[in-house]
Image 1 (cartoon, one colour):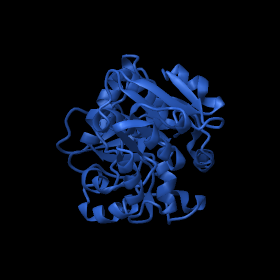
Image 2 (tube, one colour; image 1 turned 30 degrees about the vertical axis):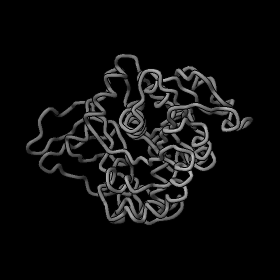
Image 3 (cartoon, rainbow, N blue to C red; image 1 turned 90 degrees about the horizontal axis):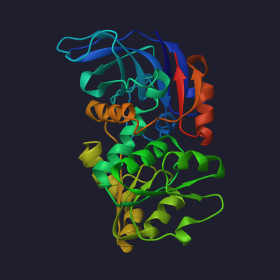
Image 4 (cartoon, rainbow, N blue to C red; image 1 turned 120 degrees about the horizontal axis):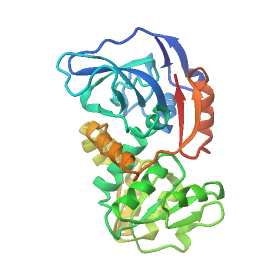
Length: 332
């Protein structure tokens, strides 16, 4: 079968389309014939080698984090899935493998696809949707009346986070360029700050929680606009000790993460707020919840562009420019 393979750590040419053996389902696994795959910044960060401490891969390895397709075969002990079922998934973080014609996954990572979506739309939902859901619901405890700030609202995670936050009852302020303002307002954002023209930290204040999708100065700014006792969850800052213990279940990494996040945690503490870095976990159960929201009209994935598999390298070049509004998807 054809697959997009990470051959080494480095630049764009470190990933190549190759022929690799077709996988066979083990006990408890379903084999999925992949129809579409979502691209994510974590994919090129893995390629660059920046996540080697977190994601231990034996190279060469098939890359890719999320997909939509149909069940092609089931291993012994699988229940609830049958050949031909349309499904979607965020793959095991330790194995990857979504950028291929076929992939085998444990059944608890897989969920029925939203019936109201096509494969391309569904393929862009798992990673960003799980990230947004777990950050807002599980870490920040967003609910009715929460004043929430989201940096980078027009990206893949941001477009879903705005909708999920509104579903949970929050008042949402976000940042976007003039190109993205109409999009984030259409998704429910109550207030939009054009980050190219204004420094939000200079005039906003009194927020209960912040979701940082940008890092750098934006993360520092969120610290300053929260109430004392406020919480910040980031997917773009530095991982902290709880990331190692809870998200990665690798407590030996906690001392390293303590060191690299020290300055961020110190600044947050001085301002009376808490800082948390989230590395989301795959979950078929959470994907079923997201599918219900989609089919109930409460959530819609935003797709920026769709490329054929043969042009996946070009799709990554566009992704790395950082200008996509919503998700970039590749179809087979």
